[in-house]
Length: 352
Ligand code: UT7
Image 1 (cartoon, rainbow, N blue to C red):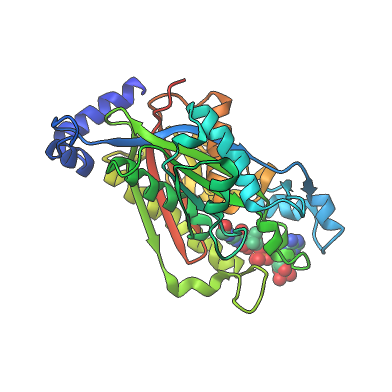
Image 2 (image 1 turned 180 degrees about the vertical axis):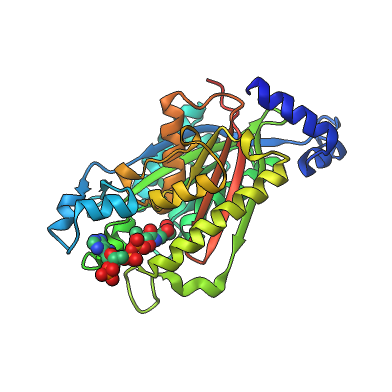
């Protein structure tokens, strides 16, 4: 934690305690009888992208588009595409193994697996059950959570609460996509955007005041037709302009609400890790939040929009870069079909 943040937060805490602190002061730890609440945090992280790369120049041979147009309108240069034989659960397992290793955990230690995906292996059983079997996580319950591209923010919100309420000690949250299979490769308005990937985190109890400080989720089903895979179709249909406006609007709204819930201000944020849908949306959101470029994590150039995987993939790259330090405040923001959106405020608890 930076000295400035410590100073500012201790002042805020005295003036107006956040709901979490208020709640924490009233709750007793069931095991010890002491007045303290359990804080859940990220203790391990990993990601995986399939090796095959599809560049903008490759796409310009498939549809009427150019590298210049794609870079200028989206910030994307290339994306990764899973081989035909590879399933979403396969990508998920690769990322999960790395996350477990980074947390120092074995598959048998996992109590719960939550997979969020806009491109699951099949309608049912859940992709999470396939992941459970492939990992050998024999003690874990498993379920999928569907909130399209906002899925990872939703899944963190749900998973962290199982740890905070002691219903689980070790929760594996995975965002994984073979979304390229839902892409109409003749539709230049959507096929240039998406890519395949997976990212995973391990959630466990962390020290008091660290980890998840606040989470906010929202939905508006009246916008369902703006971005969907219609029931009688198999490809993504999107009203790009309307989704763009929605994304820019809710990013600010979700971030502001989550920060307020955490008792923090915009300037307390060390890293902004938004869903990577379009570099212009990320820039617009960062500008509205008055966050300088060095605090904004953007890796869409190499991966495109990987839906539920984009936030853990960006977070993992940030972690591996060595820039993310113990005590840093991370703000995630997700948005997508549904319409759905949300944000998490996380004080990074993983020791470096
Ligand atoms: O994760 C889920 C959330 N999804 C999103 O957040 C996506 C949000 N939307 C967007 O990112 C943008 O709306 C797009 C990148 C999809 C489109 O960018 P835009 O600046 O909104 O372009 P536009 O749809 O207004 O189209 C401008 C022009 C049109 O041509 P005319 O009508 O002006 O002649 C399009 O036909 O660009 C044309 N166009 C293209 N040209 C070359 C559309 N796609 C392409 C393309 N290459 N790939």
